[in-house]
Length: 332
Ligand SMILES: NC(=O)c1ccc[n+]([C@@H]2O[C@H](COP(=O)([O-])OP(=O)(O)OC[C@H]3O[C@@H](n4cnc5c(N)ncnc54)[C@H](O)[C@@H]3O)[C@@H](O)[C@H]2O)c1
Ligand SMILES: C[C@H]1O[C@H](OP(=O)(O)OP(=O)(O)OC[C@H]2O[C@@H](n3ccc(=O)[nH]c3=O)[C@H](O)[C@@H]2O)[C@H](O)[C@@H](O)C1=O
Image 1 (cartoon, rainbow, N blue to C red):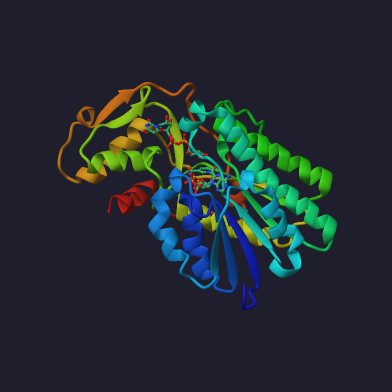
Image 2 (cartoon, protein in one colour):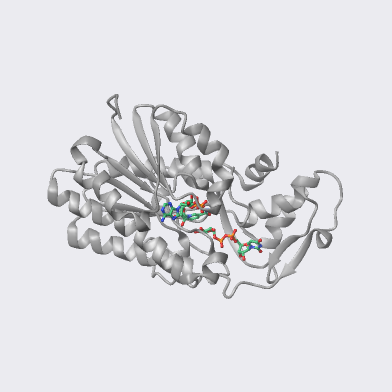
C-alpha cells in the first residue's frame, strides 16, 4: 500500500458470490479504505470472475491467491509479524466451501477447509495481540442460519446449534471455536448468520441460479424430493446493508456479538421455481410439470429455517428488495 488509507480491510472469499458483491459495493463506496482480497479461487469463484477481475483494477484493491486452510505462515506474516507495515484494521471473512450438496459428498474436506481457514485467521489475531496488545481488528465472520438446523421455531441468536448436514456442522463448529477465542483471549468477533442469499454471479448449484440456467436453456429444473422444503431468501444488496450496519458497531465493540440476518419471505422450492417460471414466461402460459423434474432428495434436507432477525431489525435494518423484484432483475 503506498497512499495512506483510513482502513486496511482483509476480505477472504472475496472472489465468491457474496464476497465479490461485497467488494463491488464497498470498494466503490469507501475509496478511503484499502481492500486486500484473499481467495483460493475454487469452482464457485468462476461465476464472479469477470466482475472480480474488473474490481481488481481499482487502486484500493489488491489480491492474494491463497488457501487460508493451508497458508498459516503467510497469514501470520501478513496479519501479525508485519503488523506495523500492513496495519490490518478489519477482517471480513466470507471464505468457506458453501455447498450443502457437495458437503454430503466430501464431509471431511468441508470440516478441514471451513474450520482451518477461519481458525488460522483467529490464531493470527491472537498472536498479533501478544505482539501488539494495543492492536484491534474489527473481525466480521460470515456464518449461516443453517447452524440452527430445522428443529427450532423463531430461533434467536441464543438458539441451540443443531446442524443436520456436514456443511452446516462445519459452520457451527467454527462459530463455537470463535466463541472460545472470545472467552479465552478476549477477541471481539462479530458472527453474522444470514438466511439464503441470492443475487448476481451466484454459481449455478444453488436453486435460484440453477432454475434460471435451466429456464434459459429450456431444460427441466431439478427439484429435490417433493419440493416442499422451504427457505427464506434475501437479496445480496439487503445483506450488504445489514453487514454495513454491523460493521459500524464492530468499531466500538469490546466484545463479540451474533446477528441473524434474514427476510420474512419464506417460499417452498416448488413455489420459488413456479414464480421464476411465471416471471420468465411473462404472460405466456406454461405447464409447470413440463418445466421441472423431481430428483432424489438430499441425505437430509432441512425442512425450513425459522430464525428471528428481530435483533438487527431493532437497530433499523430491514430488507428492501422484494423477492419477486429481485428475481425479475436477475432474469433480465
Ligand atoms: N450464499 C448463501 O446463500 C449463503 C447464506 C448464508 C451464509 N453464507 C456464507 O457466506 C459465505 C460466502 O458464501 P458464498 O455464497 O459467497 O460462497 P461461494 O461458494 O460463492 O464463495 C466462497 C469463496 O470462498 C473461497 N474459499 C473457500 N475456502 C477457501 C480457503 N480455504 N481459502 C481461500 N478462499 C476460500 C472460494 O474460493 C470462493 O471464492 C460463506 O461463508 C457461506 O457459508 C452463504
Ligand atoms: C443459508 C444457506 O443457504 C444455502 O444453502 P441451501 O442448501 O438452503 O441452498 P440451495 O440453493 O442449495 O438449496 C435450497 C433448497 O432448494 C433445493 N434445491 C437446490 C438445488 C437444486 O438444483 N434443486 C433443489 O431442489 C435444496 O434441496 C434446498 O431445499 C447456501 O448454499 C448455504 O451456503 C447457506 O449457508
